[in-house]
Structure formats: structure tokens, C-alpha cells
Length: 222
Image 1 (cartoon, rainbow, N blue to C red):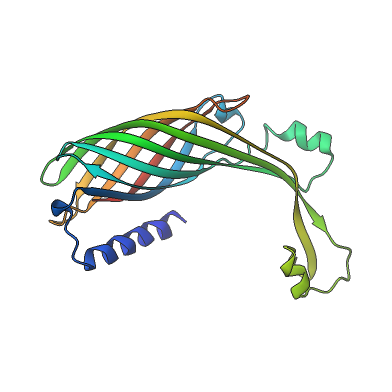
Image 2 (spheres, rainbow, N blue to C red):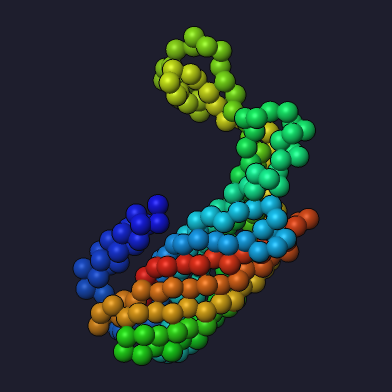
């Protein structure tokens, strides 16, 4: 998945470059990346590592100071060991849990860029929304023939068996949070395109259990 994402990022920026846009002539900055999010305690007691995707755009005041608005999605897969008691009480082996984090943040970035290598510091805050669901698989009795009607209503068909994931519980929590981190860049060409690697700490005081994680992101920016 990560490899495919990197090739997709290359294709996107190649398309932008073919339009003749020159980063050094514009005050606008953009970034697009993906990577792995590593949860920290207390989040790590319940959630495992997963993928993340970040996209953003902003304004460059000069070669050092910038404002960057970003949207980030991060998967928060359930830790099976932590959720074991829930599944045991429910007495259903087909039960599974999943959650996702969505953020919209405004950030300040200070960048030092050389001819090839660069470093930047970034931090800010915004809206953090965490959504969690517990679902189970509902199986239709054997002998039911797969058809368009089942697919229309969200059922699936695997090896001739019709089934559907039924949501048992769904809960969301939103809060204002903050982030801060550091990134390293490699200049790709004279147009100003850069490959970057970034690690950033995110914190949001979401209901009951705070959300804390470090997304490690690879991508392209200009």
C-alpha cells in the first residue's frame, strides 16, 4: 500500500509540474504524503499502528516563514488483546472493532533550505475527530443465491455465501488539539519540488481517553 501511495504521489506532482508551475514564483505551498502513525499511551494501550495520509496547502511569507493548513486521516486499528474482554462478553467471534482519526489543523512552519537538503519545524492546532465502531458479520442462511439486490443493500458474497457487516456500536468524539514536529527535505529539481520525511506529535483531549500519536510521513511538497 505504501509503495503504491508513493508512486501515486510522484504521478500527482509530475502532472502539476507539466503545467509549467514554478514554485519559486509562487507564494503558495502544497504538500501531499502518507506514512505510518504510531500511537502513544494511553492511546497505545487500545490502538495499534496504522497508515496515515496528509494533504495541505498554505502561504509562504518568505523563504523561512509559512502558514500551512492541513487535513490528516489516520487509521486507529483495535488492539485485539485490549478488546478481548468486550468480545468475550459479547460471546461472538465475528465481532470486530475499528476507529479512525480525522484532523483539520492550521500550522506555522519555519524552514531552512539549502541547495539540496533542508530542515523545518512545524506546529499548530485545530479540530480532531475520532470515530470508533464495533461491528459483527451477519450471515444469511445457506442456499441464498447471490444477486444484484443483495449488493444494492450493502451485502457481500464470498464463496456463494451472502453476508453483511452490521454496526453494533458507533461513537465519535471531537476536541481541539495541538501538534508539533520536525521534518527533513531533499530538493528534487530547480522548480522547487522536494521530498520530505516528517515526524510530528499530535495530542487531543478527546472524551474519556485522550488521543496521542506520532505520524511518520513521507511525501512531496513545493
